[in-house]
Image 1: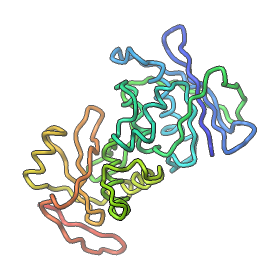
Image 2: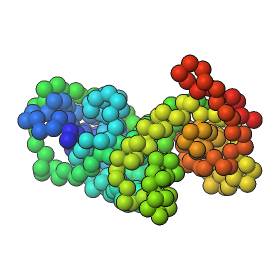
Image 3: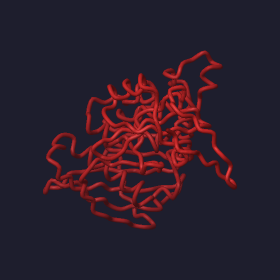
Image 4: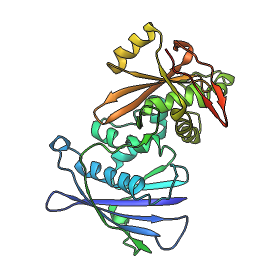
Length: 286
């Protein structure tokens, strides 16, 4: 298992320094390492700033610098953090049961969402500062980071990049990836705690495949009213025939977010695709 280890301390000027190292398998020397210098100027983040700084640094390392490599998700990755609150926000059992982890720290939950979705399989450990060892990496990378918004990861779709909520990923697991498995076991789509972590990686990969090949349209009025009550105005509905789901997209301050996936029995117009070369082409739904 490959390991990203980080430790964060506050500087005298109110900024933060996150030291990090990336070690593949059991290599004696870290392959990569360095320092991320983090600034959080938003006064709305007065509480838990060191935790938010560390989460933002992890996001920078994984999503921008890609220290773990291209195209990887959370499988076979361990992340060693400074703060127990990060581990609580990412407890697998709680994420599977309610999609919220086990923290009442709203900003910590929001900043850690990228780890709870795209990197669901990653093992999260707490590394006490006194256990940290400074080691010279083969490749050193230092960078500065000014955090101006919530760190996010997205999946491409026909309406643009979508952030994926924890609840939506759970719904894809229960209503698509493991639908037959749950029925055979006599379990419901809400009973996910017994499923292996890799099912959430499969759900993310499923979204990467299908969202660029969906159809935008409508659901029946009764279901539309329910969605409005729960997720707010002007939702977007995307249908994918093979997965049997309608993906519901809401507008949030940080962009478009996939908030849930519902059965396509609520879909108004189920179009039959036509084969063009190696691709299926769907007509425009009414």
